[in-house]
Image (tube, rainbow, N blue to C red; front, side, top):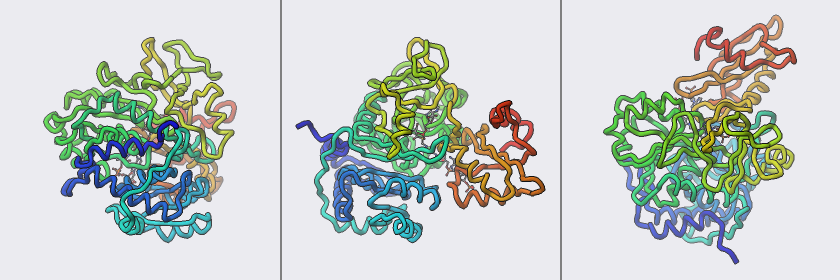
Length: 508
Ligand code: MCA
Ligand code: AMP
């Protein structure tokens, strides 16, 4: 019989060997060792089993970032269940959809949302609701504290699910990407080696942990290396600068790096101990890359990935990190730039980036037709990103074949907002576009046409949208036009709206 493919089995062995080493350090608090983390995970695993969570069950988690949250993530994996993290900004209406689709056994929520989640659980037939707060307290923490500290690690096959992470679609409903133990392990092992993780590395962690970047890319590589993790609740430039002198590696979205450059205390001296800065989730402007190098003497390593495939390409750790490019396919990962039929194009030609490898997800949860549309029969996944590859295999992302806005590293699908706007009183039609923004990279704005004879109020529209949508999706401005520009086929010309944005509208 082959070994246990459960990723937690791999971590467990390493955590045990490093049991006296710090796993997490937080400003002003005693560190949590890997041994203490193992104990906590054991207690949470027993708590999950007591709550009837079995292998293959989904556990929906919408809680603030905390070490207890990490222990819960690891415990879900340990018992062989499937972790479904949700952005804390999602409203009850948004969570309702995810819960209805994933059909979890257990929902873990912030204490402030308990009543709303219990209602939802009743309607959706979810067995249990428990809470965790930002300090790691709450009903689940209390229950776990009374449990034994050791528990068996469930035996899992490489293709069994470890995570269910939702990505919105360009049309219609959000899709749950089914991520397997093989997907997560292969990516973590590859990145740890590729990015040169070594004993003594300290990771500064300021990302949220409900997305692939902060959860799997950052935590899993650090865990494989049993690195100390400087644990910050969120990105705060001044706090990051204060903690950097103890760190060697940091991962962030481009907004982290532009915000650091706006912080006068961010100097070469502050970054003297750093080995590596990594950026991803959205394009890093070449000028940010250059300014960063001038300021602190580090070339940011830009990589490219997505929820469905984890990391796909990376600039080299040793070798040229070129501004504006995302580097080479990871070892073991295939990338091709293809035409509409999936045939590879020659070097230098722009096409769709398609990829395959052990990191590629298993498919969309209960959506076989969507899976078949996006994964070709030869296994290549159609990413929706337009790219070009040079003779040496270096990839540059040149645009998106999908109508998507990335704001501060969060994805926003215009279609979702347009559908809600179109339902509001007084609106004829709407178009949602992304426009350049100095902090978020892109900002969401909307253009609406009023129904004949009706007046629309920007602030009322924003208030209505905020009741249904996470804050980061709500347009920063909503402008009114008599009619939307259309091409001869009648399709709204978003490129034209973006082009005239600078001249027609005030900047956001
Ligand atoms: C917060 N706001 C935002 C965003 N974040 N609006 C647009 N885009 C955002 N990303 C809202 C707030 O609700 C607030 O609204 C106002 O904007 C200003 O908030 P501020 O305090 O400046 O924001 P913040 O709390 O400092 O957050 C900004 C942030 C954060 C630190 C950049 O958004 C963040 O941590 N982003 C990282 C996202 C990420 O991890 N992405 C990875 C997913 P108001 O003032 O009205 O209340 S992609 C992925 O995983 C793939 C696989 C990959 O390749 O990595
Ligand atoms: P998500 O669906 O949240 O996983 O977002 C994945 C998308 O983020 C990709 O399809 C790309 O469009 C974008 N992305 C991630 N990393 C980069 C990068 N380094 N440069 C440009 N776009 C990126």
